[in-house]
Amino acid sequence: MKNKRFASILLALAITAASLAGCSGGSSANSAPASTPAAEQSAAPSEQGTDWSNFKIGQITSLVVNDGGWCQATNQSILRAMQSLGIPEENLITIENVSEEQVAVENAYNALVSEGVNLIIGASSGYAAFLSDLAPQNPDVIIAQQGARTENLIGYQIRNYEGMFLAGYACALMSESKTLGFAASMSEASVRAAINGFALGAKYADPEEKVQVVWANSWYDVDIETQSAQTLINQGIKYMGMEASSPAVPQTCEANGAYCIGYNVDMEELAPKAVLFSYVWNFAPIFEKIIASAADGTANPDDYYYEGGDSSAISDFNSELVPEDVQKKVLQVKEDIASGKIKVYGGELKDNKGNVLVAAGETMSDEQIVAQEFLVDNVIGDWQ
View 1 (tube, helix red, strand yellow):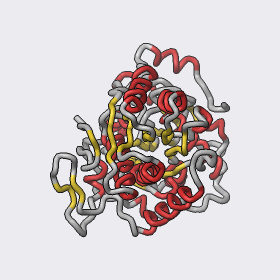
View 2 (cartoon, one colour):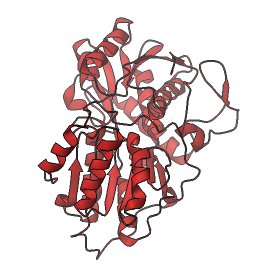
View 3 (tube, helix red, strand yellow):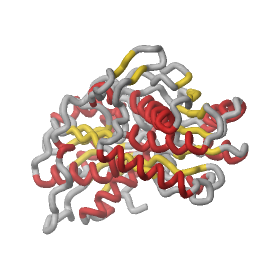
């Protein structure tokens, strides 16, 4: 890892760092994007001839960048975007283990500003309120923040439900039962989007397919995630999705002859006899656009990037586990989502309390999707 580390910064933050702060944040359900002007751009502007030697990027993460989950996926996306644009890797300054608390975030922000960064990426939505208050102090330092639209910050999020729709679809095609499982972390909007995307994909494959949810109520806890997977397996469930960062779910599946979809990053190496493929957060296309706009002076806090497609990615199939015909069907569904033939949140759509969320012939708005507080009708379990 070539990322610059500053021992003095980490020491100053140590007293405020909470090692188990939510990697994907806990506040993105509180507001939603009114529009997505920046996301309408098809690609980042050409940066040929740009001198990137002095362009510095600061990254704030709630865990370490090799956590095997959310923080690693974000870090890898930043590095891919930098490589694509030709930015030296040593121009990335990372501060890890920053808790979602005012003092911790303020210390990290001030440390990065003192290092002369041009752009700060807040990799957890729990930082949003604090960074929003700090941003006006240094208007020349652009801040991009994962999660919902927040004043003074460029927002970004991925339509994770697209990739998870493919995951649920594949599991339903392969399962012989009418019930799949889902091992979830915290009840936050992006997690519910993952569950609902998975369930809607399963329903697309088989209208009778149900999805049983078990909550860990933690962003990262090996023991509880192990228990979640084992609970589902003990109920006779053999195929499951997940929204968790540790290796516990895939490894528990492997030890019990069950199968799962990895999450955050490609998890096949963690459990090659259990992971069918993985949902992968690919922020790189979004980061390229944000970095380019920060460099040419066109970045605006009103920019909001909410994208699917290549950003809502899946890894390569585990060819030892996923039959070729299933692979072809999944890839066809991926094309159908991209073309608009399949609308994941198209109506009629009901929640599991019987309420109509979307009428027949209509499609749920981005505002409702980002802030969703429901589980769809084929999910067994509550979200609160």
